[in-house]
Length: 323
Ligand code: NAD
Image (tube, rainbow, N blue to C red; front, side, top):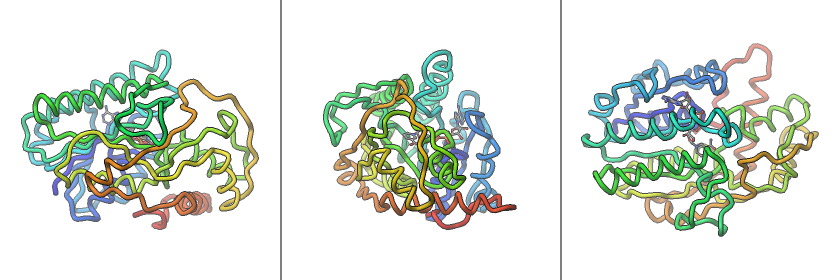
């Protein structure tokens, strides 16, 4: 299969590109290398891909690039480029969220309209649910985002549905639930937690630790994305990890895997839902999605990568933890 991956240098995008080339797909990765976090980290994410004969990289912004020629020969487009993070989406930064999540998605959909694409897979988010009315949450539950980020992801997802209904764009929106694993974005909780534990620093926690998430290992997510692209199904589906864990439970687990963690308590931030839990029946029935990595195994992979990266002179990740 020939694929275009937007957001290819990001956390999930780089894992997806590696998974696709490992399965024999030809991949064009696109990324603007935004400075939301260190672009040097993104260059490192691409290190294992550049030079691969089935991978090529195009640096550019979806808001400027001519996308139709890029999509012309593709079977699948995986649209992961976007501005993540719930807490930063209030205030003046909202413009950036609107541009990178809503306007960029509209450009992708316009370019996808008159192509022979078999599938357009969009990385939506559990943030569309906010504090949901029911758990585990099904796709039919009314979305009630509690952050501007969630509002922009919901708007982008609705655009995918509109282009699917009106123009037949074969869009699949996957609502990803708290993705974790090696290379997780440095602003995310597990990445900060594992780094703090391995460096014997304290971990600044938002909230009382009783907040819970349905954590999903990145290897399971990228496999689910490819399965969705290969299936004839389109629509909206949850991709969760299958287990709901509180932050306090995760802290205790990292304490056992790395070193006991000293926690600096802080207040919960506006934009954080209290709880997330996915009902994954739709994804299982539609394209055979089955998360296979439990939290202990996934966190152990993160700890291993962090410990190796802390050894003097080490720049690259070890192979362990990759799929
Ligand atoms: P990330 O920030 O690591 O990756 C996003 C990439 O998109 C970055 O490399 C960035 O440079 C690129 N990008 C942003 N705007 C662009 C533009 N206009 N043109 C080209 N490139 C652009 O984030 P991530 O955690 O890998 O998330 C990937 C996607 O999955 C995002 O859309 C995010 O909203 C969604 N998502 C992530 C999670 C999670 O837990 N990480 C959960 C739900 C949804």
